Length: 149
Image 1 (cartoon, one colour):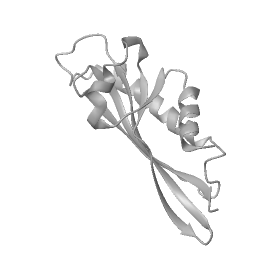
Image 2 (cartoon, rainbow, N blue to C red):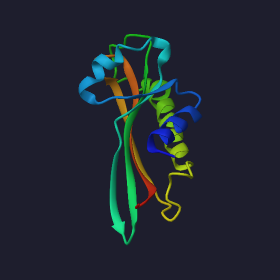
Image 3 (cartoon, one colour):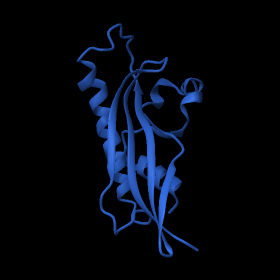
Image 4 (cartoon, rainbow, N blue to C red):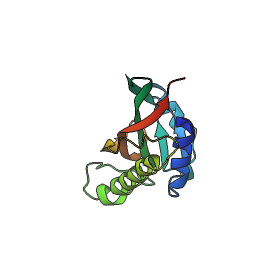
């Protein structure tokens, strides 16, 4: 299984995420305009980075996975710091991000079985960029296995 296939499968496994997209921050504002309101929440992934070390003939690699799970909110908020936003908009996206990362760890064809620790962080995102997007950004360090040919 490739990294892209694992990301696609893991996103599809989280039923409440409407889709997967790849983007970088520089193009993100234009990218957001290409979706209808019902296309959210989305898992938006920055093209992944792989760090590795050689251990004899074997490569031990760590996938650095970064992205956002965001949704557009229907109302215009003039107080985006309101505590009401946390349970209604932030926490549900945090749960989806955590489920996505957990599903990535279930991809047995990709995950290194000899390394059982993966780390992650999930950060709230209020009024992300120029749209009414609320949710979380995430970063995960996932141990993957690759053989050197």
